[in-house]
Image (cartoon, rainbow, N blue to C red; front, side, top):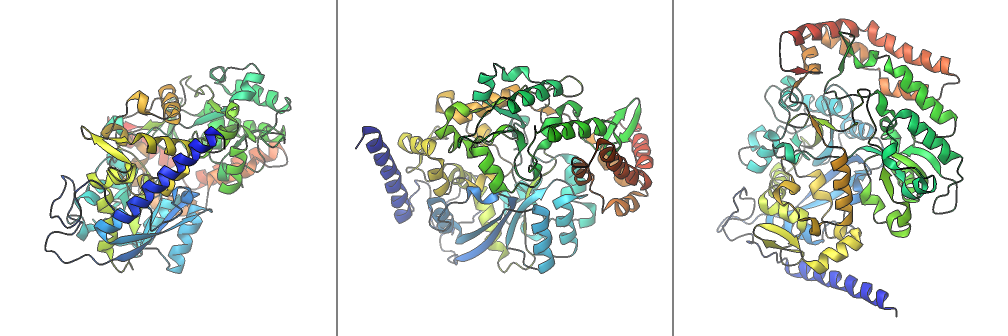
Length: 567
């Protein structure tokens, strides 16, 4: 046997032994349930000395995100993290995910009355998409009112009150129509400091080997014209994927996410649905920029520069194109979780590089725009029919305690990590194996909790890593963030002023069946540019007929009365 093979085998054996020992003993090096001692942020979810034993209970959980199950461990019940949580809370989580439309799945579970005990889903606004579906379900009594439980579970209460933009908190998370009831638990929210806002590093990423072959520097591609010229060179260059098949010059992940990265030149730093154009406020649907955006995308599609299947890709199909290097350029997040264990292992020369960053219409880099707190985020909600709400909330509360967060991010103390001056450090052999094979980390239960259950927290702020402790992929992610720092606008979004307009509900009713983005995407495939522009103008006219211009005038008047409104 080769030395390298033997080394890998021994390493894999070490991890297997560690995980087996953890499964057998449940030892964590922290205070165990039943000791009567609690950490500073714990809520008493573990058994107290002399208290009645917590009975085992199974709680169903749905990750209502297309492809959201990728982080689930293969053994949901007996991985080390799940075992420790069950030991403390009595709860076993039964995990389910989707590979279809989030809106479609939410509509299905609410219409059929088959809402799992806990659901995590997108909640970007109550005026459309998933958020509107969730709000409607809450108003119909399908979601559990959490208000009576919040004082009992302080870590859940912290999630509901921390790291949320003040306007989003008032008008969406705690919609006036909820009449003081609390239905939603935010996750993936910052801890209340600007440093804790997560940078998702959206952008355009091009295969490094192709750029090298074309003698093109990634940083030089930062305008729409330069991007177009690059894609033409790729199309005509005869480049192949790992299977020897022709590449697709440009594409996206599933359902066209995120084709908007290819249209950076018509974006700007905005926090509302309104734009100032020549001294006048207009609704975003009425921007003349849509014509240029539409014709640009049609040019990419008709000239064979963009994936014709991009807007119908499933997560499986999109990931296959990504991880085989079939997409010469893609628009989305860096997708390192998928690439580091596939393409970057087999073909490291194909590692994608960040283009630009691309410039927006003001000549600045296109980057993530945030308010001090987050507006829109994943949320957890509980079914109104849940049999044991305390069990579900006990679970959520525990994983958001200091001990629970350590467990969710680092696993079992003494088995996976040690604490040095309060900061967790991976045990070197464990870190090495997790770095080399991320699936081992996933199957230890160390992937699904941070992204779907934990909020009001930043591991980077709480446990800053020294540079020599970071993986090459963490360093790569940091390099993207350094090039695209977050732009913070500390203003109230003008969008909320529209809700004061007397005809707002009438406008909402008239436009409830209109989906501008879907109509816009349909126009990509029209028979001619003239027909495509007619389709665009038609949907814009429908918004005008519904009163969008009058609404914009109302918002402008209201905004002029204040000095804290941003567009």
